[in-house]
Length: 444
Image (tube, rainbow, N blue to C red; front, side, top):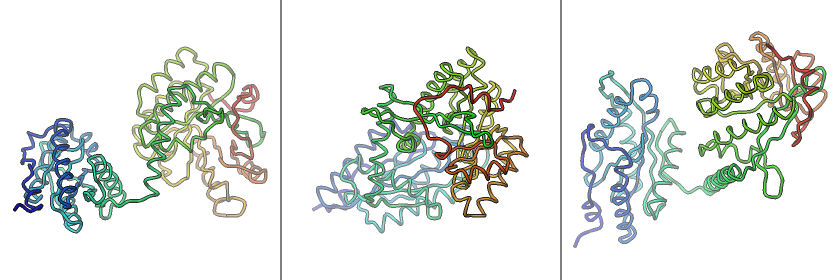
């Protein structure tokens, strides 16, 4: 009589393949799906154990950019051969996605799986791949799930393995993670999915709106410009704050859609008033030629709009790809707009960024202002940031200013503008820009 272990090992295995035979993930997906379904069905029928591991090559995009896609494909093929060389007889290796391989481990305990995942990681991390561009080394993150303990279907297996890969990437010391149920994480993922759907629906139903928060002159305490904050108008007419959906939009790749609509709404507001506005964009949008093209078309049709629009880029986005951000900043400033770095001092960016990138406005992270009256360290940080801004000829905004004492102190230190609920809350209606124009130093 055939045992479950023998049956599982007898299931079809992915044959070893040369690098030149590396197929695209879409071509292998049907075979992988059938293989995974068979293993899960066998586990459910015979109460056996198996596992799915996803081996993700870290930063393959950097290899492709530095050496070309031909070299990247060569590395992928060699990585596959290396994995096939260390799996057990009966296990199978498949191309899962652009930088990921799937390994189906039959008759596998959790302790076996941990050993195997570390072996996969070490095999790729310790190997130097010879290519036409010279030797290339990589690192790998490995996430896995036990079946059927934590996955009864193919969808559950792949979803949970992907969750484990994300955990492995965050744990750079081990770079290996096994899926474990986590109610809080699952609720967060479900909430993100709902938030993402709400963004798509709001865009489709034209329910994205702008709320306008005044940014006051530190001395005059009159509006210098307004920050246009994106909101979703709910079915009952209330406005949903961006913090309730923007993170999900970024994680799900929807934020560029939001940024496109935000630009359209801001341009409409500028055409209808003489206001000065600032808008926030994501790091993804800095790499989006369609967004730049839309902006350029609007400025070409109405050049005067350029001096009344400020583009804000969050500090965390600036730190990721400085050279690409510089190209974006140069392009926007060439159209006559000003560019601000938002949340500066939040801890992501070195001061070298201010020397490298020509920002017109530096918005100092509000966390410093919030404790400034009682914490001398915050006072030192703010005064230092203001001095640095002046040295690079940039204007300054301090965010989260909620009381007059803090506002007076900041004005005395030479801060140009103040923003916060104490200075004015976001409003649906945008006031005339006459006062703004009178109080704002528009630079030629």
